[in-house]
Image (cartoon, rainbow, N blue to C red; front, side):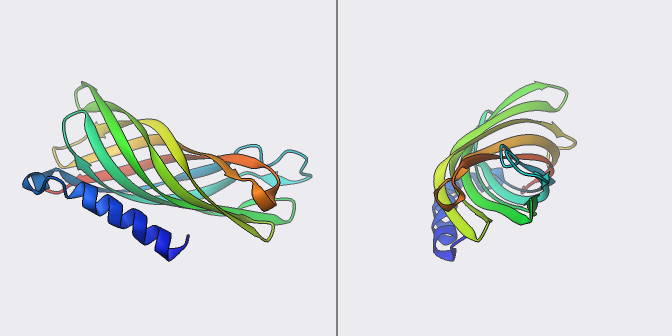
Length: 179
């Protein structure tokens, strides 16, 4: 990912997360690990492993019980198609809606803007677009929670890749609220 683009996304998110300054105790940090699946990349391939490990980090600001703003960074390992490797990484600024169920369980839905890079076959494509996802969260304490999520970066590639693919991230993560 271009450092200038990453800096622009991070700066925008930092400015949004700091508004209003009166409620700084609603900031949280998190990390995620899981699998990335490169959808439709195996079509016509003789050998294919369309899954790779992924790691991600996020920082968020909870504005109400039902709405947060998050900046997420994701990096996947290599998927292998024939003799070529594919790698996706990106940054996203998402609104996260939470729907408390009972006993510390919460459903969540996310959607926002992403900037991502797909590398492979000697090509590198950059994309601005929308991302979206769903998941669940369990609060162990007021400060610690665990998450399970699915997030999609749609229509990656194109250009020199010849076709667009969706990259799905299936992750488990932890969240720590700064108080």
